[in-house]
Length: 268
Image (cartoon, rainbow, N blue to C red; front, top):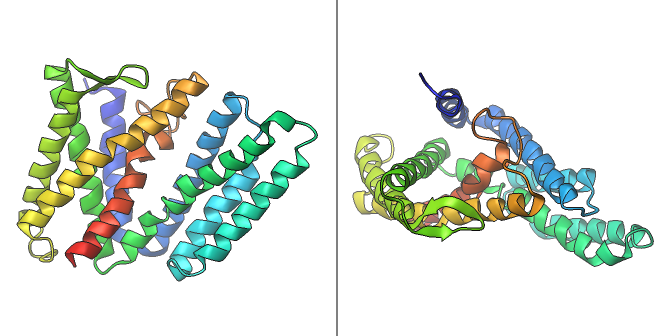
């Protein structure tokens, strides 16, 4: 009998691939909603830790960066960042009398949260905006998923040496190695399988893409694990049965999209 986690994956993975393939307005709205929910989960983690942060401010900042990235690419980002810095500073000043000890920290939490979800999240849109962007998004997601699968298989069978006992007790260096092996192997396979639609992805480029994503994206998972540990919760949310919240899944995607974007530019 299939577990809840597997059943959710069988629904969520094809849905995400379909939305990525459709692209356009459907994809844009999906990213806005997904990262909007992710912002709420991020805000709730900070509130659980006892920090005085504003969800409307964080949501507005994240959505502003996403909309600007969709409309103008990176143009105008400097002005958007100034607005975000100013709004965060004003909020901290207004709240100073009530929570004096947190005012400076609150400023940093707002800015870092908005940049993490809005700026990094914007690469979902930047990658999709490239020529054949929908294919590049699907390739990037597939490589991350296969690296995760390799990490799970190797970790379950041979995992002995913990990567970070405090942050993520289940993650092992053996699993990390398995993720790298699966990532490189999947990159090679995809470069061959997609030769007709992505001739730009040479065999060695597929391997490099899989290698880089498998090496770096687990750090995103550890970062969210750190926040969850600090908040004393197991998952960031409950939206995806068996998996947790959006942040529990998107923690690696955020970095993967950024890396995928610059790798594609390098290959092209």
